[in-house]
Image (cartoon, rainbow, N blue to C red):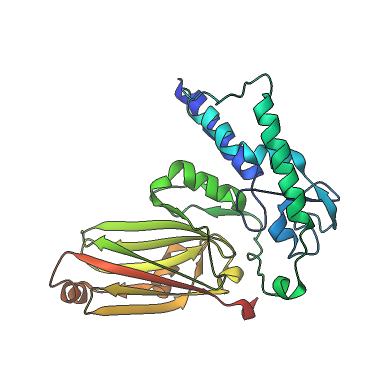
Length: 296
């Protein structure tokens, strides 16, 4: 297939995934989808934690977006049909929806009604936290040599399609702390990167760079404004089983100039890296990320 057509198909797939994201938590829609009086949608979990639409500030009145719910159940199939020319839908046709598909949709809608009708106590609601608000404008992708600058809602689809080898999407979060660790080879020069999407926190870029001289730099950036970034602190522990060096600091907004990153990141000179790695060529890197709710 012509490369220009495939590029267009990938663009359509990104657009559909962006449309079917909750604008609050940036997760793909699933289950019941709440709709405000002006037609904007959010997932029901986020709607139960906010009093007005994040787009237009109008109220929610219990209306559901059944079209978005139906499309969300078919999202993976729609994306495959666009990006894989050899993909054939299982039982569904382009001209219409088969009987089995209709049955599945009806069953899903009934289960959504049951979910919405369940009462949640005020005590449980008070323990829920929503993701930080998202600043307007575009944000740069910090992965590799990518030069794209995208709206917040387009960043995850972009990473999934163009940087999927670096992407980690977490499904469960305790809302205040996230931890992860990796084993990284000490290669000169090299760059280890991860894009991490964490529920109730946001999308983050972790970058560990080793220069040609052997110095190590590490930083954590969020796809959001510098003000929102202040809600998060992080710690990087680098070393081996017997020797570790640590850095603690605030997460940086991804719009921060590259010249300022070195002032707010982990730095380990080559001499100390050789001391840490005297028994091997790999080192461990542990990330501990905290969200400080009291600060927003």
